[in-house]
Image (cartoon, rainbow, N blue to C red; front, side, top):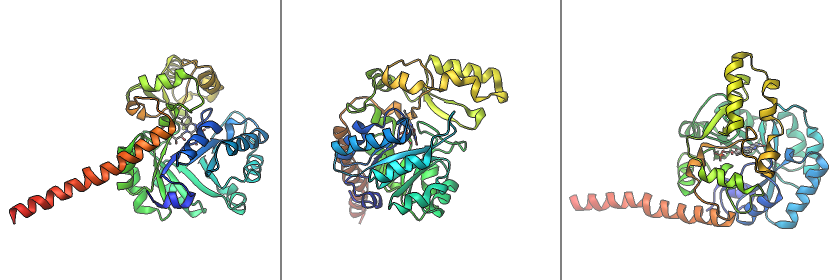
Length: 334
Ligand SMILES: Cc1cc2nc3c(=O)[nH]c(=O)nc-3n(C[C@H](O)[C@H](O)[C@H](O)COP(=O)(O)O)c2cc1C
């Protein structure tokens, strides 16, 4: 399948793997890129720019296809040295960066000077337009369903994607709630040039996370995510667990007086405990409503091949089938 996104990134299929803290290591990024999608290493999971440089080199040993690096600009307890991370990205020969969180405006000159294509993840039309205006090459439009930070507008993709299509000139991928061929075809119908998946890629054989995480995703239903940190205007969609219940109790108790320090234990340093040690009740970790659509743990290649084969079938048989049926019916009347 050829779209503006496959052409822009030099990939076979219009499927991007979003950056994921403690999931987006070289193993997953390489598996996605080798299967014809765009794999992305999560920059800040590497504790220093030097470690990121090593991770990029490790990924290059596993694939000769294009892959990218995610740089997330979110409030953290200690601000990372972004210019040094960008230097590691540039020196590692990376040509695609997924940015997320705050606007990447101040870093655009450095990224563009290195010939890097920037895809910015945004949860609103106004932020997407801002991304276009500051020179981003594409956007990843992330609906309210998404795992991670859905923003504060609570806008689901049924509205957000066609609105983005009405306003944007640069291509965009649909992100949030995407799991299979139905998601891809629907996203294309609503004006996207591809899709970005997070949660779905965690439940794959190659995702380098503890088996408990994959099992929890397969076991969960679409009703099992919770929104945390709303009072801090840093909303995150997470999978419910005992740590998240504790966090929500504190949030209810503190109300609008909530401070990030109040929930430090339930949100800080949780990812390694969950993703590496498989401690499923450790606290808040991002997970999308799309868990309700995830029922197996295929290889990345099986997943992507299945999506592309099924997408062709949906388009050629199901969708054009409606038109063929209509023309047959019309012929009968005539
Ligand atoms: C476990 C997990 C960790 C994530 N970490 C990040 C991150 O560090 N930076 C980022 O930009 N997005 C992050 N995301 C968001 C994903 O890149 C992607 O936008 C999102 O998962 C899409 O929604 P979906 O889960 O419904 O597919 C994370 C998502 C998950 C599930």
